[in-house]
Image (cartoon, rainbow, N blue to C red; front, side, top):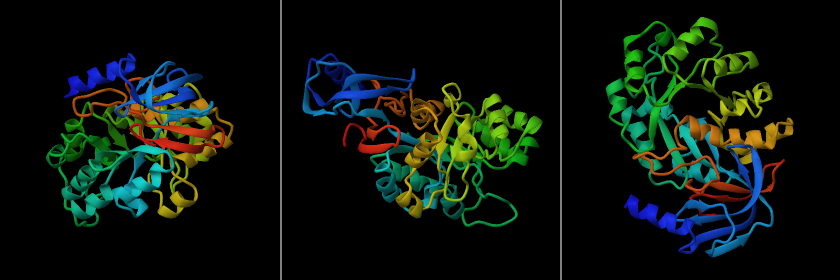
Length: 356
C-alpha cells in the first residue's frame, strides 16, 4: 500500500497525473530558512507534492498573493481542561488554525487509569486533526492523596506505547523522584529512553536542572522567568512558551524569540478553558500577541509549527506514522493556513490534509 501511495505521489509531483488541488500565486513561508517565496502549491492525496508552476489540478484556486504558513501545533495541552471531548475540542481549535496537538491526558488518567489514556488514543484515530498522546507519567500525581485511577507503572504505559499516535512519556512532575533516583520514576524514564520525555520543572535551576536534563528529559512548559528559560535552553531542554487560562508566561518569555532561539522555543496552551478559546483563540492567540510585541513573523510562525514537529520527530517519516508535518514543503501533509494578513494572523482558510 505504501509503495503504491509513493508511486502515485511521485506521479503527481512529476506532473504525469492531475493533482487534487492546486493553489496558485501563494506566498509560502519556508520555515527552514525563514524566507517567503512566491509559488503554486500542488496537493495530491492529502500531501503537498510540489511547490512549482505548471501543475494541473481538479480544483484550482488563485490565492492572489496571500501568505501560506504551516498549521499550528500545540506543544502541550490537557484537552480535559477545555471541558470538551476530543471531537468537540477539534472543532473548536481547528477553526483557530491548530491542526495538531500534543496532549497529556493525565487528568482523565487519574480518574480512569489506563482506560482514560486508551480513550484518548482511540479518539485520536477518528479525528481530522492530529492528536498525539504523551503517556502520563505521574498517576497518581501525588501519594499524599488517593485517586480513582490507581497507579500506572512503566509496564502499564508501555502496553500503550505501540499505538501510532503515542509519542513518549508525558510531563515528569516528580522532580524530587528524578533527582533522588526513585526506582519507579527511573524505570519509566528508562523505558522511554530514545522517545520524547516531557518535563515539568518550575524554577528548577543550577545542578538540579543539570541532573534533570541528564535523565533525558528534553522539554519543559513550566518556565515563568526569562533567566530560567534561557538556562533550560542552554542545557538542551526545549522551552514551550505557555499562555493558558491561568498560567500566562508569554509576555515574560516572548522576548527570547529570535531566528536562532526559535529552534528551541515553541508555543503551548497547557490548560485553556472553552470561554478563552471562543473569545481569544488557541495557538493563534499566542501568535497574534507575539506579533504585537514586534517579533519577526517568520520566527513566530516557525515556533508555532516546525519547531514542535521537529522536537517530537513529526517532521520525519516512520513506520508508525507514514506522514510528516510542520512545514509547507513537498512530502509533508497538507496542513497549512491561508492568511488574510500576516501581522494580525487573520486566518482566511485552514487546510487539513489538503481539505479546506
